[in-house]
Amino acid sequence: MNRWGSENFTKYYDEKRTVVEKYLKDLSMNRPQNIPKMLWDSMMYSLLAGGKRVRPVLAMTVGEIFGLKEEVLPLAVALEMIHTASLVHDDMPCMDNDSLRRGKPTNHIVYGESMALLAGDALFLYAIEQALKNLNTVKSLQESNIINALNTLLEAAGPAGICGGQAMDISESSNFSFSPWKIAYFKTATLLKASVISPAQLAGALEFEIKALTSYASHLGITFQIIDDVLDVIGEKTSLGKNPGKDKTQGKKTFVELYGLEKSIELARLHSKKSIDALRNINRNTAYLASFAAYLESRTH
Picture 1 (spheres, rainbow, N blue to C red):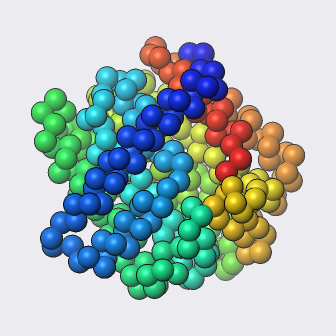
Picture 2 (picture 1 turned 30 degrees about the horizontal axis):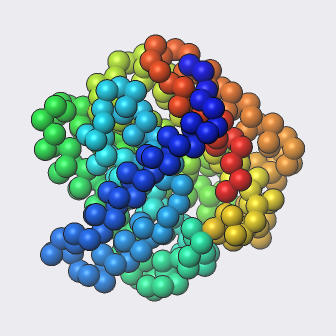
């Protein structure tokens, strides 16, 4: 379980991201006739806006580790749809009220608040719809595994997942108060965890493997959110693709606000190491997952 060199890692990542982008592009060009064009355009505007595609690349990687190839793509794309939906809602005036996402004007700036709200809702639901339809056509997949994988996606997207995390996040301005650890787990780590667990479930991974991957992904998600908080302080608008400094402006309880910049970076390193250590319990080639943890720890955007 050695990490890959940075050059091999970048090549592998780019290859997987290219596959995801092609799938999304093909999807965007085949609008179902019963979906209004103005709604579809709003959905696809955010879905095709770019981004790191962390979640689908993770899903494809885990799928490969457990013997799946193109069979995992509908699941991987569903994860990206859910993530994008959460960003569309997160940027709205009633939430974080942001004007820039992935280097482009946010959805509500282009299509209006009402359409952005509907586009986010539609992406959440269409993610599961298209995944269920396409996964059911793959004869090599067991129905029970498909159900388990989609159940993990639904839980991560719902009130016990990113919706709950967002509720905690906006409650910081009310009489409620939640620690950044709890917000990070629900708002960020749950969907990253689903990106790792659901493809393993789809492949029929064993219980001890799921347990190890759960630990890996949970620590990975915490690392991701800590670095997000750090980059909100020290990141540049051009590289981030969004407006930095929002957390401080909105008075949010972030890791940086609670621990300071230096300590937050130390915490990110600690949880990155814990995520990598969790992989030692899996007797498979998890080198890429280890490199992935190192990548998220050191990212600059």
